[in-house]
Image (cartoon, rainbow, N blue to C red):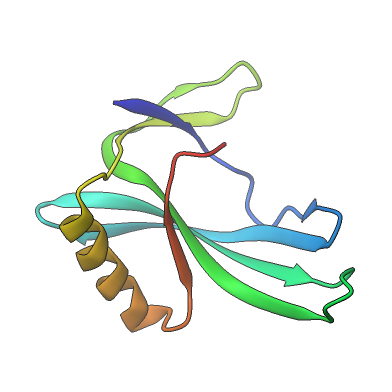
Length: 111
């Protein structure tokens, strides 16, 4: 089990080549559990390759305990179980592609 620290939605994160932001936090039912899904948009606007963008979904894992604590900065935390099984990842990706057909899907707790 891991602890996920919730992000503030619609807050721009800049990088050398552009920016991204999370636009929604969703709970996706799958296999009798709920996967925590963070939907985001990214835009490359400072690159020699031109301007482009994408939709992505980051999945920290299955929800074990929803917003059961706070981090040192007062942000809510949720306990999650990372999803490492490839078949489960493929199933969740297929479910997400019904709503977000061209989204890039990542299974990571990355903070």
